[in-house]
Image (cartoon, rainbow, N blue to C red):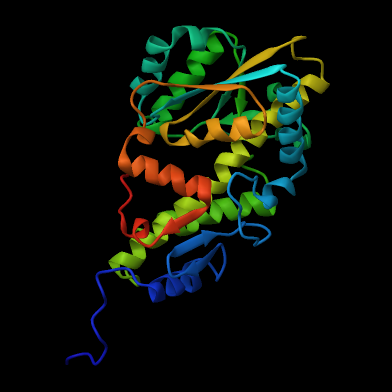
Length: 302
């Protein structure tokens, strides 16, 4: 029997975005216009502004304190952040960091990393030494990278500062980010109720909203750890240099740190995605909080 419905268009249309937003995003997280989408805050629903911390992040007391600390110490010229941007999909990626940037790795004592953590025993405002690190439990890929990373840092007595939100964080920000990643980004890849253009757009939007929020939150979490260490008299007096190790796609964090008046430098182990046309376009979406219709039809490179 021939369907009376017109065949699905292979090209993403505005109506597809409305269907995706209703079906997967609960009608939230982004506005739709003729030229594409504008990102909304995952907690407050406000339209996000370029170069401004998402307001939902600032509702989290710890992250707000972290940003205040970064801004204050940066303005006083008592803090420098060294960013080390690199792939992190295998153990060799970390080894390359140590080989290509030995001086950058050797100097700082305090090292921010992309890692999950938990606060055992009900401690509400833990110090880094009181938490439980939760590396990826795989022996390959990202798990192999983290195993190599943690082993190297511990062997040299570095203070590891995990900069993801806590695994046990029950707050609306953490819950929204988990849903974007696990409930939309990962699940939509196999969602056969969506057309191929809808499926690709759903994953792009989920990844975009997630990273537009998470990458800011990572900086706030780094600031929070430094703030806690400072109030506990566990930071050295005078100027402090800390290292933050991030994936290659976090180059926009350099710009954000400078917006916070924190002196920062970025180092890469290879030409990063910011040097490619797609990478430049992706970084632009994270700075402007917008995605064009053309970009929404570009497959993710991973």
